[in-house]
Image (cartoon, rainbow, N blue to C red; front, side):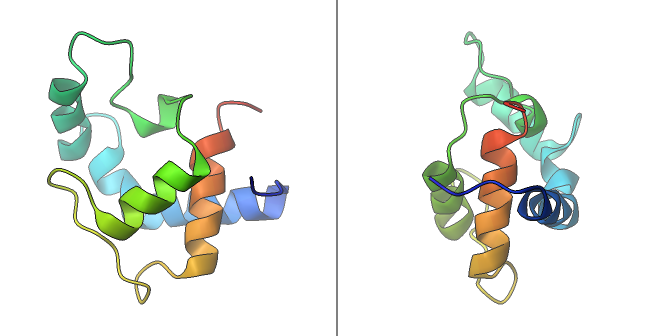
Amino acid sequence: MLASNSTDYTKGKQVFDKWCVHCHGIGMTATNALKIVYKGTNISPVLAQRKDLDVEFVKFIVKHGRYSMPFFRKTEINDEQLKNLALYLSTKNKK
């Protein structure tokens, strides 16, 4: 598990806002696609509302992609940014 500090958390939100919110924001294409994937469950398609995301899952999906989501290269999201993004997505709803 990653050690949490507010600077890393803030940096993770910045990565999310730069790379992710355009598809994973409310009413965006990936969110709408996830509505279909999670239909009939209690899982929110809005990443900002999720409480079940963990660090390793986030890192894996960003590195490898999933469904129609492409993977991200290290030249787009480097290891430090990925660590911070994973921290942000895994803890933002637990604070």
